[in-house]
Amino acid sequence: MIDRIHHVGIVVHSADDALGFFRDTLGLHVTEDRVIDEQGVRGVLLACGENEIELLEPTRDDTGVARFLQSRGQTLHHICFNTDDVNAELARLKAMGVQLIDEEPRDGLAGRIAFIHPKAMHGVLVELATPPDRGHVSTEKGFDHLAVSVADYVAAQESWKHIVGLEVVNEIHPEGRGMVIGQMPCGQVMVELLAATTPDSPLAQRLMEQGERASSMVAIEVKDLDAEVAKYRAKGLTLPDPAVGVLPNSRTSTISAEQAFGLAIQLIEFKR
Image 1 (cartoon, rainbow, N blue to C red):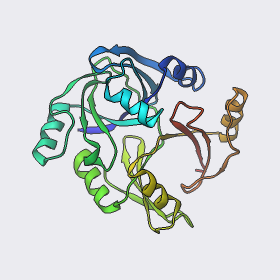
Image 2: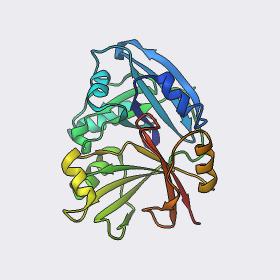
Image 3: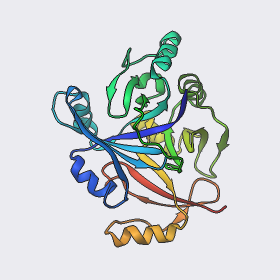
């Protein structure tokens, strides 16, 4: 059973350089750091509440991760879901005829893993992982939400429901933005499907240019946004002044992807 987001993976030129941000500036704790020779990567996992962020640094030039970095640059690579039985999940997906990258589980940084082909998930590379007993466990909230832009909202809902068991429980129609946000809970995280409702909206234009994909962003809830912005500015980062967010009763500010090794960090405060 899939019960939470295990991690989001980003591809970086240098894991050591990225650790200077994620470990030293954000204060995240490293839970795993090793080279996986057969995959040609160095992987680093950093805990963020119940979730983790994975840094992937290619160690050879002849791998898919290396080619991804060359073509796309530092950015989000995949979303990984935690399951107690990756074998059972793969058997279920194969019986459904879902297009897979891995027909059988293999060893990875997060445990026993397998990847679903992005064509099955509207442009999103999805990993399933059954962590080892020694893996990171926390009941604290990590990410607040992730976002996935989709061209066919109805079809995407069906795919996410049947393949990974997530279902839209709430819809938000931000005023003047020509879009709908479908919220799907997974553990303490909301996975959001973003779809254009007007052909001239910024999201519709972005979908035309980039296609369906997961946004290279994670949102993290904070209690005092002004204090968090001041803290990171004091560390030399550039953040915009807090502003009203897209989600109801929220204010946000964002550490840009350019400063965060390809993964934008949105700081979000809710008025409870």
